[in-house]
Length: 402
Image (cartoon, rainbow, N blue to C red; front, side, top):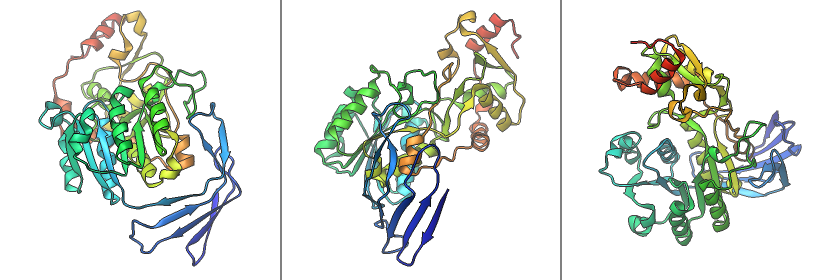
């Protein structure tokens, strides 16, 4: 609980009595100054003594320091190097739109060619929204980034494309040589090693051979100001990787939803706007974000059965859930189901503590919005084959809906 006292000099004094499981000093002084209500150059000076998560710290351990840094909501010029496939492409799309709305300059460099078939799919076929808001869109290869951008300069670069150092190094090296002030990287929560003590928190052990780990190490050694973000599963308009759609496809057709295991496995599903807002805070609070790793996820977990039920609720239809043992039916669960067949969820502790981030994901509301769009684009009428589902059902001797 925090109590704020304001004075005519625009200073705020916060008396913090408690905050989750972390201990803050009893007094945090925050001084704000602004030349105008709408100015982007207003400044914020913070001198608290608090505990912050360290990317190198052991699990749940924190290190104490007393920073004094200035957070300036000044206009930045941001480059987003965006993947042309997979679920992460939508992160760059939302991030660009949020930055533009806040008055920043944005260029999106999408890997590949503008005329490719991939660009006919979301979110790429909605890039006119970025251009209409004042952003720029270009296409090319990361290895040719210097030629593609023709000497353009940026304050911030987000690499939302590379999964290994070979792919990211050309972007990072160019950014360093170009005088980029802040380098951000979209990593993955999938690099955490399985744990008997979920959820995953920043500082948990990661897989040493994971490509993202090598990238995080390299940028930490290359840039004075860097941060890495580890997303998990996400939903949101413009996503081109099935998540909620997998459930909708079966529910609207009256088919069973086949879930491996007990269905009580916990996972994390965030709306992409929450990932975007976390990234935007890092841009606007560069000194706070610097040198940190952030789990870029929702602040609530959901069971696999729970996801099926929430999707059915959004569709206003009943759902039949059928559980199965992948080994017993001879099916690879990775190919039959969109989520991991295990407890796999992370918590955004660092973002809350360091950036002051607040999540807004509400699956009940967000999935209803997603179902409305699902129907609007006609996917509920699309012919879909369920061959893998049918094999599982045949092995279980469950009749198939026709």
